[in-house]
Length: 122
Length: 114
Image 1 (cartoon, each protein chain N blue to C red):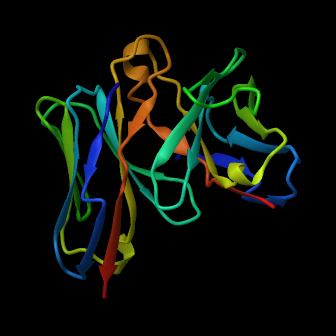
Image 2 (image 1 turned 180 degrees about the horizontal axis):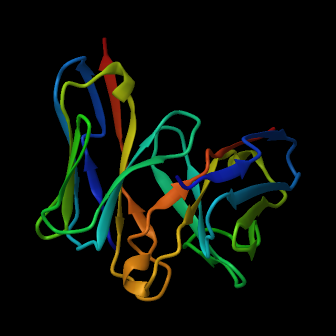
C-alpha cells in the first residue's frame, strides 16, 4: 500500500531554533500534501495544504512566516518551524493524497499519513 | 463551514462487547474516510465510503455511509483489546479544483479491557 515517510520522528531543541520536518511519499506521486498539528487527546487540526510547485494554502490563524512549507517535488514536502518556542511544541503529522484520475474523484482519494513528528521546545 | 460531529468521545468496554461510533454533519460529503490512530503514530486508513447507503465490512468492523451522505457509523462486533485506539472519521467535501481538504471529527478514544 501507499507509504508516507515522515522524518524526524522526534525532535528536542532549544527555544529559538528552526526545525525542518520532511514528508515523503515513497511509492506514489502526491501533488498535494497536508500538514496537521495534533494536541494531546485531540483530533487533527489542518495547518496548511501544500501544492507541488506553488505556494501553500494556510488555514486561518496559522502564521505562514512561522511555518514555512516547501513542496519542491511530487514526492517531498517540508515544514520548517522557524524560531520555535515552547508553545510550538506539539505532534506534527503530514499526509499525502494519491492523485485521482479527474477532479471529481480527486477529493475522494484517501490520504496516507506519516507517523508524525513529536516536537519539544525547551 | 462544514463540521463533523463524532460521538462518543470516549468509550471503555469489556472484551467481547459490541460498539458503534457515529459521525454526523449537516453538510453533504462526497466521501467519508475512517482512520485508526495509535499513540505516537499517524492515522492509518481503514476504509473510504463513497456511495450513499454504502456498507463496507472489514473483518469485525462494519462501516456505513448514510443515504444522504451526511453521516456515517462504525460498528465493531465482539471487540478485542487489539481494537483499542483513537478512531477518526474524516469527510471530503464537494470542492472544486484539487484541494478537497478532509474535515476531521474529534475522534473516539476506544479502550477495550480484557
